[in-house]
Image (cartoon, rainbow, N blue to C red; front, side, top):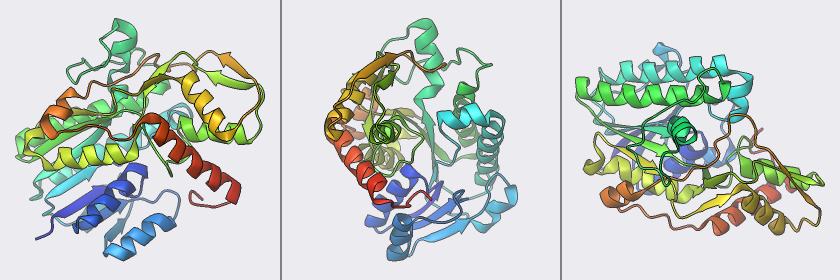
Length: 331
């Protein structure tokens, strides 16, 4: 009998890729999303139609939206949130309101259902302040204390809501007797990720002919995690009993590179012939980030398979084609 799965936020970048993978397993899937762009994009529509996926379109910051969902899912993936540095800077108040209401409404709904397990997707941003202020070890394990370095900075509003979610789902699961796993993503990237992330933004700037090309935060490092690896790790974390009640770092501890190395590599793929100009990082940006994924490897055998150069090339090729062809996937 196929598993019955709910994906809250199933129309997003990671959500859609999880949906595709679970559909290939023959699962009975429901997607819950507000489709904030106004419509379902063609890629997701094809997956939905091909696999007879149920779609519930509503504003899940409202409690009544959850009445359209069933109450006996085996797995519930809670991915829905407003994410992106641009949103933290432009609408920090709305980001807090939306993400908090999504978390609390999901928790209040789940406690009265027969759903067996919830996976909440969190972020490395939760411990960014610990790295900056206290020099915590890198690669960083799940035991790192969560910390916000400057609570007044809008850059950290997203992290605050994810910290709430981590605590909320773990504590509710204990009281209301459902299983729960927390997954902290670390710089997940890939084709069709939108334009709120560094790789598509850099590609866009190269194609516009920026010269000299400004490399902001050139000496900062990140460990990028290709979407296929992140999806596999997330699903394995959900489906393993070994992860019940656990927090797992999902990323690639062997791919830590500087932003300068990343930008120069993208430039080489696009055959950029101009000059580069080093610039200071944007305010609130973390100087270094790399997860220790030993726990995920031990519990679920997680090992990223896509090296950062191969993954970045796939991503850049997709965005170059998208931008030069006038496609409207994100319209």
